Length: 284
Image (cartoon, rainbow, N blue to C red; front, top):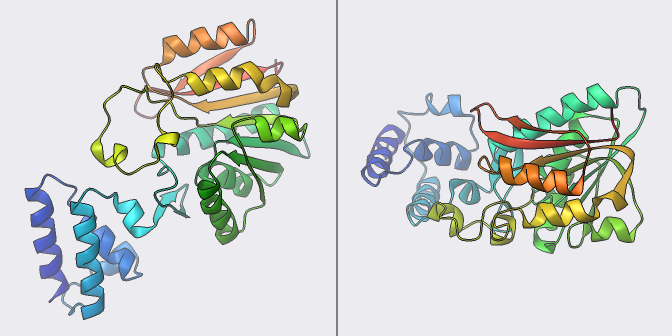
């Protein structure tokens, strides 16, 4: 079959089922190990039989509700390809904005530091920790996760991208407290979806629930961190979190309860939604 016809048929099938038509091209150029622009130079070529079978299998998996990122085994984050599978959350664009803002804050508050200790709690695929380690050479990065399977993915990503990150397995802050480690920067993107909130089936049915749901109001893990995080902070420290876009009021109450008198701000993302929390622990 000619590639042009294969893509046309696949896009029509996706459109009929109200699914993302771009998936056909994305899946094909990934399987063919081509760049997106190279696809257009191949449109009148015959598709190899083995490649055609792989493509049809992938399309069937997608039609059955599996995310394209898990089918491809990769997702792009901060212009780098990260390995992803069903053991880790798929990195989102909003999290790129968190990383970008952390890099700005490093320039603002730690510019004169020759070395900066940073931890990423609940690292998942390692996207945050690895990206920060690669973008800012002054950082000494430690990352934790409760899931051994997730850490396997994170370690594979660090190896593939040649990032220096130390990984610990354990529940939230425990591995850091046990080792009596302290940090200049504390980062976390904990699960923040309320337990009973309806979410897209493609997310609920595929991505790990341990990385999605955060108790009755979504703030269970934030409160758990806020309660004990001083044990792992240096005298002056920056705390950075991703958060749910509708949690401003609840989050403000929690921060003011656990960090009375400490400056903090909730920052909007590019879409104008409340997405990032920064706490300035003795940084003024």
